[in-house]
Every structure is written in C-alpha cells, then in structure tokens.
Image: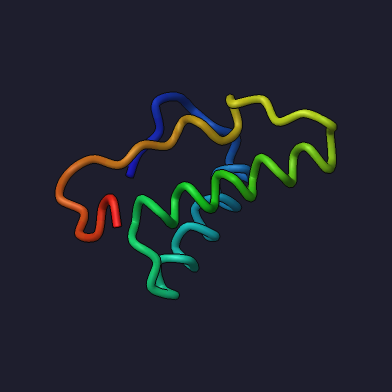
Length: 70
C-alpha cells in the first residue's frame, strides 16, 4: 500500500489503523481499504459537511494481494 500524494499524518494514521483492523478481522485487503476510505468520507462529512478526496483517495494497493475482488 502506498499513497499517490502526501497525506497529513493524523488522517493517514486513522485510515491505515482502520484498514489493518479490518484486515485482521478477515476482510480482504482491497475490501478493507475501501471500507476504511468510506468511513473516512463519512467522518469528514459529519465533521466538516464535506469530504474532499485529498484526505482519503491517495491510497493505492499494488502487487499480489490474496482475496482481491472477493
């Protein structure tokens, strides 16, 4: 997993922590990232009434990731 641009540390830590929690709970990596991103969008909408993609859309996965598309 990597980012396409620099994301503020706090936002990145929250999203990554949640993504890894979801993977530990058995979600495939891509599904965990998607769910963590959707949760980040919801948090920002609740707090700021908007969810600019700068804070959640920078993340990407590359390489062999078992469970993709499942």
